Length: 532
Image (cartoon, rainbow, N blue to C red; front, side, top):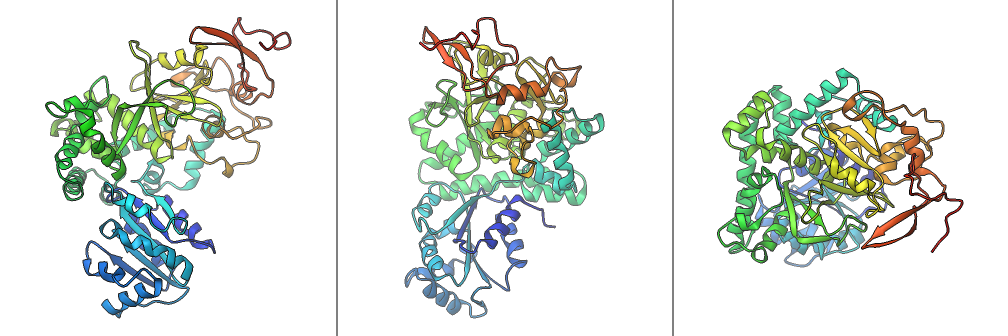
């Protein structure tokens, strides 16, 4: 069975571009790259020439005489005369290019020649892709695939786009989900947490309607990943990379989820393991969440390179590495045990990463102030809290209320509860995380979209949208203020002045045309404020 992927739409758009360049689709092992390309090719070309450099190493010789398009086509035909090249209606598919990265040099010449479409696919294993990236710059397009996100999982379950649109409308209008919707989506999301998004695992689940055999598939994937480390990593790094990879579940289970190199092996030092962590990140096996030096913009470069958390690129692989008792309890009883916090943090980190966000957190030294994640809009730094239990998101509220963090004006709390808002904190269920960066272009201009307002940073007006009053946090009661007021706060054109304190100094600061619904008493009247 074929699982619908978001890459399908990307490939169709690429095909419709008359000025398209050769395409490189990269991604971790076994996330469905080859299957997706094969499906696309079969529906769009009269002839498909597929070369797998791992399964058929003889084809690595096709570049021996040079990188010209005609030279490579001639050499392929010499090796296998059955392969047909039809100008204007042929796709040449080079698979597993990490085994022969030199082929990337030829992409420039295929682009100039223009007679054939070319797609390359390869796993992001260690430094192999760095070599590929240095070739054919300006003559290729790169696209990254990951395992299925929750939206793709819902597609696999049979839910159509109308259901996804309905979920998104709830976020846009800040209207709580019904009891039926919460039960259905929460159950599906927990299934997704257990299974992950690796296509082989999801396909097995869809075929059988059960979890039977899925754990075995997941653990085989773990073995395959470990074998890839042994195959592609060099020298002493093999053992070190394996040590880091195998210690991720143990360290995520701790209250302090910062990854500690010293716990990986006796006498282990960060300087010896820095390259190992980078290797795993480059391969796509893991996601790295970096600790910000201070919660302010910009995010790039604003972090301590020695402090980070490591999450698996697919949460299903995290589940597969749990002990048998924990894994069985999770599948049978949905009991996460000591891994509850780690599980929800991991699945949110995965959703944010797949949405295109880099991962950052903050832990203040000698303080309980800690924030799980940060994302940004065009102008604001937005804290994201993951609550495995009911709670008040104390650290987030401290960040919002403090004058020390002027770029933090509101936050998003993800929990098991329903949609709601309270004191500049918007609460949403875990299963909506994939929607937070949904492109607003699908919706009418002027729609007051939570997603566009908070996370995309697009300028929207709340006029005429019929925004509903949101429920309290975790779905109970009525909010202290309507979402209409909240949107007007984000989008107000009225400049105000507010005190800002940083490093013991205090001065007036323009709040970039934003206005809180109920300004604190120490905020001066804008009409009487003056610049210093």
